[in-house]
Amino acid sequence: MTYGRPPVVDGQTWREALAELRVREKAATRELDAIAAQRRRLPMVELPDYTLVGQQGPVRLSDIFGGRSQLIVYNHMWTDGAEFQCGGCTSFTSQFTRLDFLDNYDARFVIVTNGPIAEALAYKARVGNTMDWFSSAESSFGADVDAAPGEGFALNVFLKNGDTVYRTWHTTGRGVEQVSHTFPLIDVLPFGRREEWQDSPDGWPQGPTYAGWLDSPDVARLYGQ
Image (cartoon, rainbow, N blue to C red; front, side):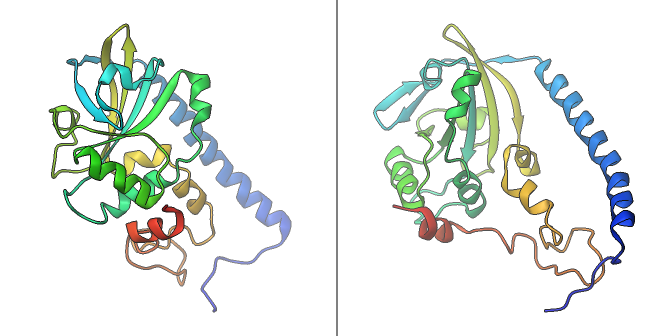
């Protein structure tokens, strides 16, 4: 298949163009460092003593930390009784398979959903997810951290001091891309995400947004038990 393409040049011209791009890439890296520094200085919100439900039954939010002081929670969208849940959430969480490195940073990453725990655990197995799942169906936790039943997904981060838990950061939408490895890998490809909203050279392949994403049945077929 033949595509339109940027100019084809000699090696030296290519290196000069790459060096020009590198200036912007390094500036973006420094800006991300500055954003992270500001994030570490955000004020915190003290949370109530929530009780969620895990595989072993009711569990306090403070105990979900598993002896660590920091906790990342992905609030997974949920529809009770559905065979397959949100394709975006399912595809996003399927990439996190080796999280033991977080132990060295005194942190843990789990999934919380508003669905009943039996359904959540069955879905976890169906799509081959490896993180621990918890249900907030019996508490207001989901709504209180901007992931209410019937609403969208979220990424929330918490800090624990003793038995007291603080909410330190939240994002949603494309904000979760910063903890993903899938989109950064795709973005360095010549064609990028191949989505119609992207600014690409004339003739580069592009299609509908989300067209390349794995849907929940795809994840189940590839990774499910």
